Image 1 (cartoon, rainbow, N blue to C red):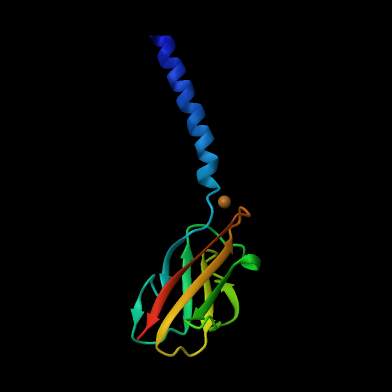
Image 2: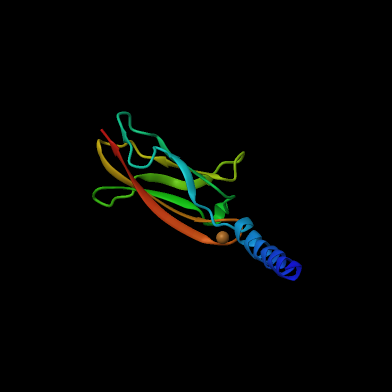
Length: 123
Ligand SMILES: [Cu+2]
């Protein structure tokens, strides 16, 4: 019986050791954004901000915003905030009412790439 418990504890310890690096090396995924996902805003935003759950590599991280016609309405290069390595921002041209997509493509400090997109609407 004691032997069984010892083996169980050992197996549990190994499992924890195997899981810990995976958690510490998580990729970057959005935790919130402005505008929020699927939002309908009455005032055209001047920028899109996305907060991630891991530090970003600014060289390889960007947000591209397009209108319904597929035209790019984001301006310049996306910026990782100087005071927050998890916040990525892009400027926007003046937005007319309509549907828009914010596409994000980022590389976390662990070197892993993730991407996705979400819609928002200007009323
Ligand atoms: Cu990763």
